[in-house]
Length: 217
Image 1 (cartoon, rainbow, N blue to C red):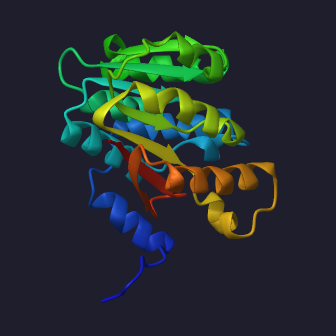
Image 2: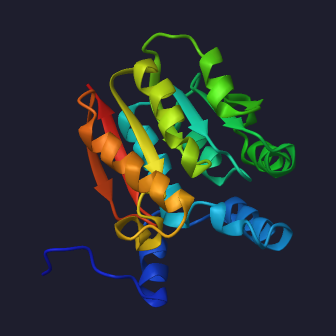
C-alpha cells in the first residue's frame, strides 16, 4: 500500500488505459491523425484515460447541459458528448477553425454531432453570450492557461448548484511548485484562486497533467 499516487511507467500506463474503457477505433484514429497532422501541438490532446474519465463523469453526474472551453481536435468533446443522454447538449468554445475542423469530422463519425454546438471566437467574450443563470451541469476548461481565471469567472455563476467544473493541466508537468514561464505562473495563481473560492468544493487529482474537479455550492 502507499499513501500517495504512484508514478506511471509506460507499461503501467498502458495497463491502466487497457483496463478502463480502452480507446475504440474512432478515438485511436483521432489521436493518430492529430499526431500526424499537428505533431508540434498534439500534446494539447487529452490523455486516453482522461477521455474515458470524462465520459464516465458525464454519465455519473447525469449531465444534460455541458460546456467546453478549448476543443482542439475534439477528443475531450467527443468523450463528453458520448456521456450525454438523449437531448443533452454540449457547447464548445474555441478559436481555431483548423483544429475544430478535425473535431467536426470525428463528431460526425461517432454519431454525436447533433449534440454539439461549436462557437468560434475568444472564449472570454463568447462565454458571455450564455444565459446568465445557473443552468450548466458540467464544464471542462482546457484552453490557454492565462485565460483560466476569466473562464472560471464566467462559468461559476452559470453552474447549477451541484454542478461540476473540471480544469485540466493544473500540475503543469510538476512545474507549479517552481514555475518556469508565464503559463506555469498563471496556473499556480489560478490553483490558489480555486482553493480560496468559497463558492466551490474542489479536489485536485493526479490524472494526466493534473485535473481539478470543483463542485459548485
